[in-house]
Amino acid sequence: MTHKQQLKERLEQLRQEFATGQDRLAKLDGERANLRDTLLRISGAIQVLEETLGEGAGEDTSPSDGGETATS
Image (tube, rainbow, N blue to C red):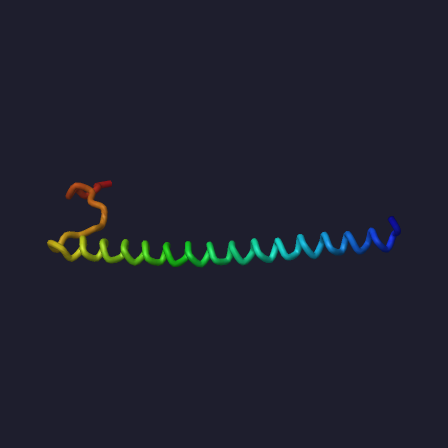
């Protein structure tokens, strides 16, 4: 095998690896977009539930200390 043939084979290998990498990157970008959309939906649901719980019976959603105040 000549040196030129070796270089051509290596070039073809690198082109294939590059194409494979581009395909994988495109798939990962799609997965990332789907995950971002899912997280946005979950965040919206959390906000709605928090607001509903806060307005439902006029209850405060902040943590309670049992009605006691700390004295120093």
